[in-house]
Image 1 (cartoon, rainbow, N blue to C red):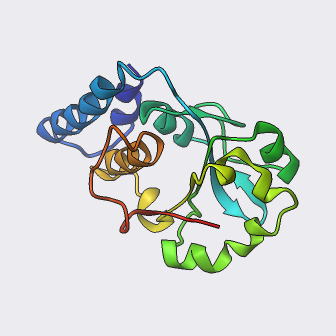
Image 2: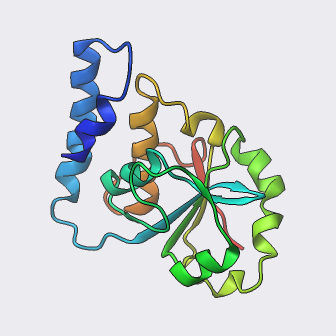
Image 3: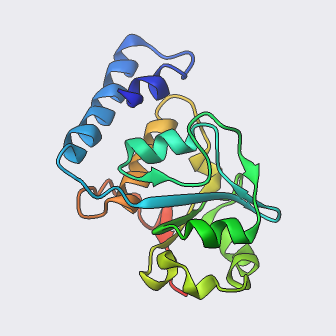
Amino acid sequence: MPANNIIYQLSNITQQSLEELQERLDIIEHKLKFIDKKPTVACLEWLDPLTIAGNLLPEMVTIAGGTPVLVAAGEQSLAIDWQDIQQADPEILVVIVRGLSVERTMREIGLLLQQPGFADLQAIKNKRLYIADGEQFFYYNNAGIVDSIEMLAEIIQPKQFIFGNEGEGWIKFEV
């Protein structure tokens, strides 16, 4: 079960807290058992240079019901060319700029919007571009990591999950 790998990477956590976090992840896993459609997801950690989020993010995307593209679980975040995104043509594009709030990322989003062929991406055509709060998203201690997985679950599988993070932890961005 991939959720266990995520939970046990947390430090300074009590057994009770560990069980509560595992229970939250078990709920996500249970709801996704019957979902066959695991859309492709690209999570961008930086816009300049364009960087695909690695480390725990690919595993978190998988737990949340998606299929990460351009990076595998455990691989480092890596700078990529715009053509890599175009070739992968993800169904969902999540911009999670490390350390930036949703509002601040919105001021920087023009770097992405001006890329050639941006409007031709499947994620854009299907209105599946999201901005997540990079200030709280990468806060990987205690419940922060599970909060982030819940945010991804809301984004990736919106018919299955409503945890109340939309508007606070992430927004849908329409071009």
